[in-house]
Image: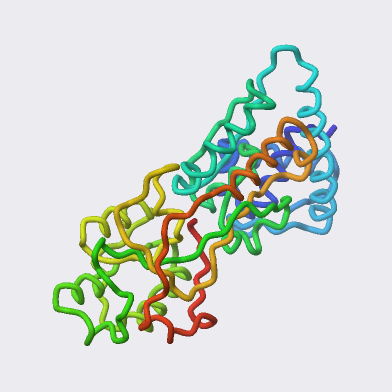
Length: 331
């Protein structure tokens, strides 16, 4: 007999492509995962994975079972979600994963809208990176992941995708650093202003992102030097606020709450907007209370008020917006 537990383990391992990652994703020890996979293979009489050290590649039988297991597990999840509506006094729990900079602005409004219809639903918020959110989603420990579309271009295809909002990239500078008439970032500024503009705060979100950012800075601010690297936009904006340097960030990250922003000036740059999407297993899209939450999330995204953004400075207008594309792996 094939059990649901075995199918869930097989599904997670197949998407993880290694026992190490699957173990982290499911919160189970590797020996336990190996044992369950071996039992599953013995019960069906076929090998599901070609094992190469810690790498696992699906066999033809494994690919067949993966397609079937996705349908089975989706059906079970949808049935359990539907049955919850019939349980008297049951409180629904919706688990959401997102970066802090997104969650703090988007979720309060979404929860307020949700509470009008389902006041008893509990929101379990995970402040995680897009990569971690995807792992939790594959491990069925999240209902919704809110991430940048570019960060899931290839890995998020298994889930229903909905647009939530988009915001432009901006150059965050200390208050009072006027770039509105700067044609030459070296010749048109005094020594103090030039020193701040050439002190850049970058993000160590992964090698591809770093390379794209470095290429942009080399074109836009060729005399720059990196004074700090950060994993969060909040830290970068705090450094900018103190007059230490400048940083390229999505505009929404400068907003702290509904009515507050970091005390910085934001200048538009000629980079593609960051598009934020919600990823959710398809079985939840039409089942309550999840459907209402998704609608509330979409409405909250449409109601987002971005902080004030100044026009692109003259010295940045010559930068090629096609060449200098940033795929935002971390936000």
